Image (tube, rainbow, N blue to C red; front, side, top):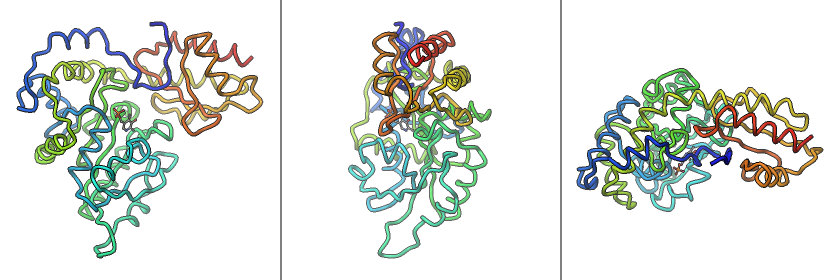
Length: 348
Ligand SMILES: *Cc1c(COP(=O)(O)O)cnc(C)c1O
């Protein structure tokens, strides 16, 4: 287990505490609402985000889809970032399964959708138009660098939504990274919005799962939407047990990952043929470019790091010279130094 895998925080292995908790977890049939460990996870997650209720789902993708299916009917519309995970990386599920139309806005470098652009995208009542139901934010915004959206911005979007009788959903795959970076509680950051999904299986290290939170009435409907897409699970307590450890032990340590990302970024900035904007390293993601004059091509760098050092870093999908490194629980400060030494040596 000396592999240094910086490709994503989805690669995190469950911790020993998680494996032990999974082994001993009390379980029941969760479709009957009888799994005590799932019930505990849903309640603790909801409490941490200051919402009434939670729903354990198989993935972040499923959490978003269940949220959209619950907030919107067929032919209705969401306002969402063009670079959002929901648009780019969820196989078009909103359209394929929900008949839900997307009205896409360019995500700004700070991760926001401009309030004016949102306002202009909201449809008036007219037979020609889909009906706008929902605004979707992503926090942290992944594709543009793991940038956290502030409480103030989230409040402004919440207000705009209420003015127009719309709901707000946050794809918070890395919601606790955002709260950590902003120095606020997850509940404070979630307060202005109607629903949030967050992943247990990324920086929080659980092997499987996400939780969707919102009002009790919303979650009651969401349970039904989850059933529609086959997401009702039986003795899911074995998975929820790891999720409980994730909530109790992992949400409060994400600052370490952010500090390690900062060290990695600052080290990379010292390497002549690497270009990096340090101001954009705000959570656990480090985006950097390899200069065309570098000794190695991006593909060669990836290949040699893997073959000679057991270090995994990939070019970002769709980008020729841009790499993304993501820090997480298994990337210790020592492993950051090993990585920097390896890159320095290969590019010297
Ligand atoms: C990873 C991710 C998801 C989906 O999570 P899965 O558990 O991989 O389905 C959703 N949104 C964002 C921003 C993500 O990074």
